[in-house]
Image 1 (cartoon, rainbow, N blue to C red):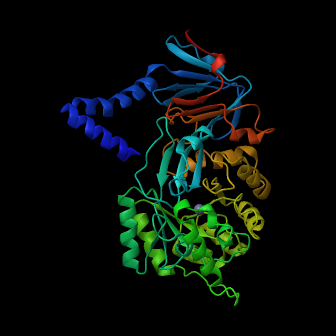
Image 2 (image 1 turned 90 degrees about the vertical axis):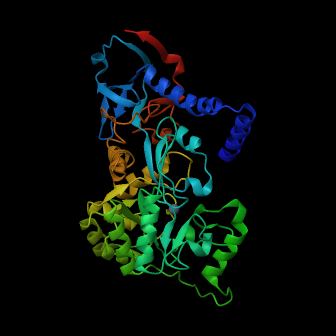
Image 3 (image 1 turned 90 degrees about the horizontal axis):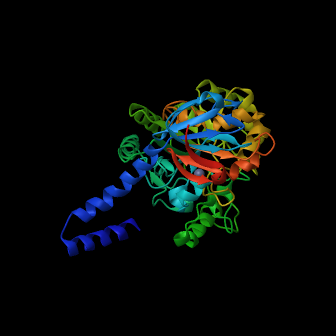
Length: 438
Ligand SMILES: [Zn+2]
């Protein structure tokens, strides 16, 4: 698409023999957006607000120059400048949600769809690597790039290696791969420690059920055949073939190289062996709640190392160990971060309220705690200052949903207001909106 437009521009340039058209085409939209953001501050009033920490009432939010400039009581806003006022009535204002485990690029999910459904930032964990972009009226997209794995390791037997995985066999190769990914824009390094075969896991399904939802239209047939072969080898013998795992030494090298470049490492873990390697090697984050039951002692060790777990409970709800692991992790004081695996076929392409409901149910968390896991705590995990909060200086990534979330959490999937970097993307409150000079 972009290539197509570029070619058209080149043809136009050749015809006119003037660089001015190109300059106008390239710079005009940027000026237009910048003007739009800078032009008029936006003042939001609503019955309640979740500011990234807690739920409050009688608090309004002022947005200027793409950032939150002030929050305070409704009465405290007595500005003399021109302000666009949006009165949201009984709605709840929140920071845009942050999805920490997505596969947007690999599955070609439209970023605009995700943004319109309340996710303002995603971290793509497995897919093509690129520099972070967006956040100014478009979805903010960060990536890990391809998953580092063992030769013939998961997910290669199912998905191949193109754009989704890189196999390494030595510590040196692993370190070089980490450096290359970081140079190309990876904000985190993802590894796989997956021998396969966990009951209830999407990647254990084969035949009619493509792994993980990562079915690529152009290659789906080939991948399903691979999947079938990898798991059953000879169907008659019914013997499962294990996928090879990265050694502890190689994972240590990956963690050390990533930390030298100020990056964390997240691991796809689903059972005990992978968990043990990750703990021994000092992996920072687990990209899923493990599917199989993990002994309390190992979870305790991970908590003591300040490991964080990205939930993805919705896609793993059929796994045998999910409830035990989540309940134990939470009881031990372990931190959970929101991730629902956008692009998985069973998951909404936006906020997944069911994921939050599972977190509340299995981990015994209250509403404010699960919202923190999807906003301020996720922003901290991404090292983007104030992202996921509604504090002065935070990026103006804001959503609003009808009513009180305590009663209608599902409403989160249908936000009536979405603002990205101060730019209004969705506004179903238009009728209540007026431009005025106070
Ligand atoms: Zn995934």
